[in-house]
Length: 218
Image 1 (tube, rainbow, N blue to C red):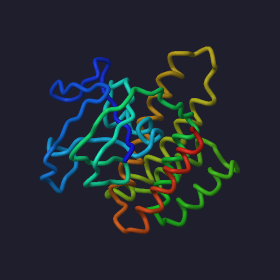
Image 2: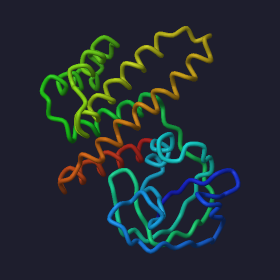
Image 3: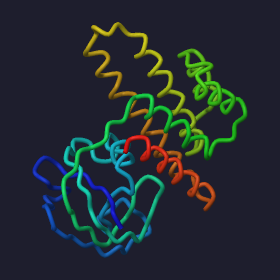
Image 4: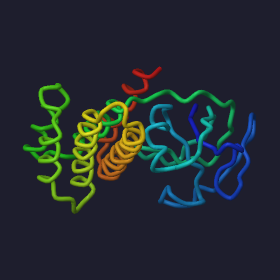
């Protein structure tokens, strides 16, 4: 299937693994956990690759279209036993609003706290995008498990965005830093939501949300 993968500027990944057009690497897939050397990692969607980069692959800058054999799939990345990089492609742009919205929507899949969900409805409709409401929502969810962390960080991302939006546009450094921080907060929410999603219905819903974002940036 077609997948997407990040490499560094030299087209390498961990342990100086070299990629390029038509290059294939394999792994044994002998682990129930995806985050180790037994898997090659990739993403089902371009938008997903861009969204998850701040948390998963840091300074990697080259996005590749690949063909891969997926054996273990999570809702935020895929584990493959074989990947062939086909061609480098331009990464799609994600707006800060899209990042925050994704964090909220994915957290909503797993979090059923009524007060927090009332805030999400007001936030997504545009009725209330204030920093104060977002901070109240974040504080109301006490983080102690994957579900509450997902909800908490989604609200924190929204609060940070509200702050950044109010900053004087001439404060370039502050805005740039805020953008990076918001992306990190949003991807934290996504990672926790992905970890908390365990039922087939939840996984299907999360995949549908990713597909919708992919359509937006196509």
